[in-house]
Length: 82
Length: 82
Image (cartoon, rainbow over all chains, first blue to last red; front, side):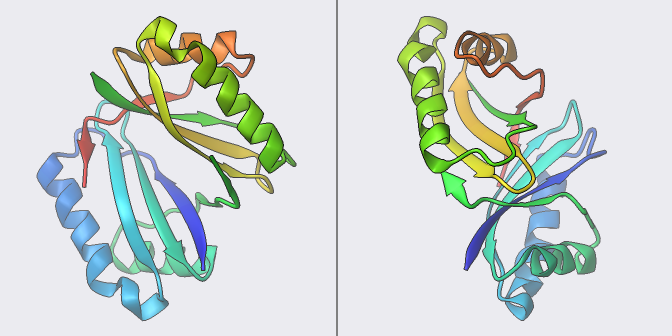
């Protein structure tokens, strides 16, 4: 399993409740792809969201987000961390 | 105190040791600005690094990174998380 950070843009003004609901849509289907989303953060003023996940591949992470209704092509494999 | 994610680009091929050294340069001076860098992740293939920090302001986070030799203007205040 690898670790991934994905980035979403355009989430300006998204509320805490909306982020929670979006995250729950990911959690509801993530097991289909062997993915687990550990954390999500949002800057509502700049519309940037970040999700930290573990899973088998970038493509698996992208498929979960796409099926959950918030696709992104910006998925980074975090091979190094400190 | 607020939470921040900052993003660095162009870190292609950076090694684990180099990321550790860069992170340690931040840690060595962060207290001057009331900032603490909690975590750093890197995708060396795409050259993207992400740092999670707590601190008083975006500007404080930027000043630490600038003084440590790896400035970035991409700093997001994470007012929402799940």
